[in-house]
Image (cartoon, rainbow, N blue to C red):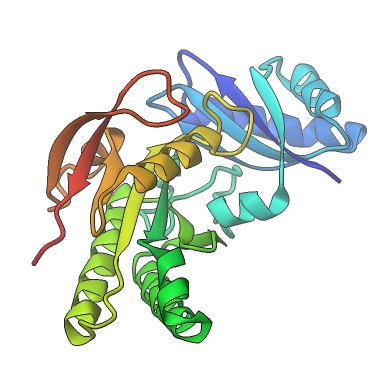
Length: 277
């Protein structure tokens, strides 16, 4: 059965209001062959994101209409494997609200994710100058370093891009710490292997599950990818939202001003995370 995410924008919403509405959905859903399994509440932004299995979007909407009348602004179909990659095997409370992994009891997850990309600098040149076998050995170093950093930072690998890795984090600070670990490990690798230095760019952005584009984290993914492509070798370039999400976490950022990125109608403010020891 298809998987959908519906998005509600409410000016005044509390976690208790959403819990009551979800309970009413559960009472009605079988009538329409629908299963509302879990939801995310961003009380600060007044938004709710519900994940639902349904035969079609109309059936999911019928449940909301009959149960409580709180209709979604959008209902989009999502790929189950992408939902799993971005959200993982989440824990919910008794009401069905998703909780922050490792957070305090009943600490609700607002659904915001930080998306991170790595990109190996001059990857094509590696293959041409060193040959396939030697180049693959360097790529394996990258993969090992990045995956170890993800494991240490509670990150989830979304996919391998060929020249890098795309990952998702619940915490923006964890994403930045992951990027810092990657750059420091590769810097030490370059010192030990000066004849074959391996350098990467890193880009990261934070956002809600559905913003402008009607696909899961589409805008956030696009921004993170563009920032990664714009970054200098060995640089960690992040979106404007990330330093604010990292306040009080002991991380340092340098404001690099507005940058022009392909696909964005206006310049985007970016920051470079400081990673040197």
